[in-house]
Amino acid sequence: MKKILFASTALVATAGVAAAELTWSGSGRLGVVYTENASQDTVLDHRFRLTVNGVTETDGGVKFEGRIRWQADDGISGGNVNGGGATGGAGAAGFAVSTGGFRVDVGHVSDVFDSGDVVTWGGHGVGYTGFLDQAANFSGFQKVGFGNGQAASQTIKALYSISDFTVNASYTLNDTTIAGADENWQIGAGYNFGAHRIGAMYGDDKMAGKQWAIGADGSFGDFSYAALVGDNDTVNDTMFGLSGAYAVSAAGSITGFVSSGGGSGLDTSYGIGYSHSLGGGVSLAAGVGSNSAGNTQADAGVTFSF
View 1: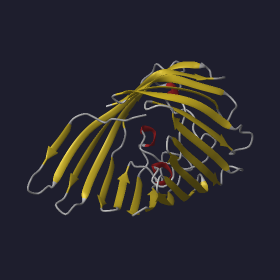
View 2: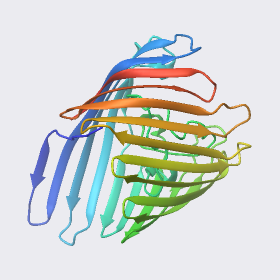
View 3: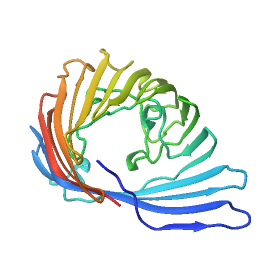
View 4: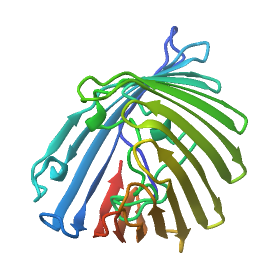
């Protein structure tokens, strides 16, 4: 899906500031979601996001950034099976300082496992919501991201890139609002070679225990792929995932995935989807698959970015 970010941008140049930029951007989606054996199997899905980024750079080339995001959802996750109750609001702020190949993120930011800096977690999901992907069977992992539901999490993440090599590390403070939670740390490393990348991550957390994941992704012409293997102390089986996307035209692509392993009694998850770009950041997409509980899931709808 082609993403185009456009809104209002303010540029300022003063004697004490090399450059300052304020950017508003956002995205939306609207469609229908089906889940077999749910209390209501077919619901109307919608979501709207609005993000504001502020960036400034010193005369010495050190960049400072701040970000906050507002989001409103249909309310399905809050227990309204008809999807009519709006939920959302502003998440907490995230900050970053960077220079050259070094960057530090602080506050409401992604940790190593969530960031995608060295390993692609979900790969190529299916459906307009990406309701299933190669990590569908990956349960029990500690992953903190930039989402409204994790606004209480405070993380420090450092990243350094030199040539084709990237290393990163993160530390997340104990979220006292979650029973049994504790501080956690994670490290990762990745290497790019041409159109391909390999990476590995490791972490330790009281709730998830020790966890690790190894991944690869890249492309061969019109075909893109991703693969993921992982494990943690809360499940009794190593998890595997594989996904791919093939561009059948300049505007359309087919995606598919398979995910297996994880907890006892889980079925292998799999699915296929199609996405078609209408231009201007607008795409139509649909998908169908089977989740780890053996239930069929499907969706169809439109997404747009601005």
